[in-house]
Image (cartoon, rainbow, N blue to C red):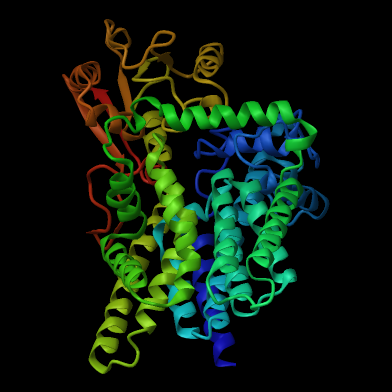
Length: 545
């Protein structure tokens, strides 16, 4: 009973953090889509079929695996029938509230929040499977409050579901290692295939049950090498079956599937312009930036110690998570696209190793107490960071605050200049600022629509265009650090000149900022990973004096 209550408490904590602020940036009368740049793309391409919400196997969009989108389609269909979730509905579209873009996005977010909270259950049960219940509780609690997991648990993206399935694969591998059976191995294989069908690079989690097969001494003597080969073939077959179940488009529409996968591979090798340019060594970047901000320094130090202890101890159970963590980290560090969320699938294995390391010290009186006391302090501080992000998502967004200010401070008919073509980073002066379409098409769409102000956008295929600031001088200039952070870091001359010109002779009003609690800064004011900055940007509006 005590064990069940402990697990329930951890899941309730995780669920509360992921539901707090779940409505952040959703569509409203000022914007058609949400403030997350991927959610609109995911909805239009992965869930809707030619603009209509109906389940379909060939989604025609394979930049990611389709399993999350198929789950989302089902959830949207159920919600459409029963109306559990409502969202803002544009009166001109004549849609029921449960069929609105906002409702469908919220359904996708609730899937992610549920998956992220359920990951805590799997971690808890993994400790029990290894007969180290405290290790599972430690791991589950740390995952529950990890800012990277909490923030991404609010988004309608593939990451949280992929992370849950990686954790399930690790659990199945632990189960197989302790009590080998072809059924358990088949389940592990199917799970690994589903993980790959959600996010392709998590296919590496199949290495966890593979290590369980080939660890010395884990198989009966009869059969030996031949038995392991047969089991490896079984794992491969079930993994492939799981992938095709979760991503049937690989067969149904193989040409589009191949083209999209190759596109993503090329982008990963090429990078995304200024976003990750000159960020140095990828492995160092993910450790010092992605994981530092995704966990906080104290938690990063703790899990680093846990991984080191795992590497030096002779506990063969740590081989299983390490079989995924090491190659996955090497792959992500080698890529030129380095979003912090790419570290999320690693967290279940990392926190599990931390739990195993801390519980290994239980028998040592002073060391064990010190370790657990330190762990409690680390969890407390990490939870405060997560709460800070949740407060940002639950409160008015900086873009909405800036929009209110513009409406009161900038008279209609005045001109407003932008550094780049408006998108999710900009206050929504028009609802279509958030449209999930290429920038050139969005620019044309914006300029073709009536507005209360004269909108000065950069010329076609230009950014930080000084002509937007030419006489007659605009009444306001809007800049978001979501668009300026990386160009300023790179000290781009055109960007610095634009910012100096925008500030010259104008008063600046800023909105938003980094997470705080009681004015205590929880996140540094410097560089922040782009996908954490989504929820806490700083918007600067330069107003004519």
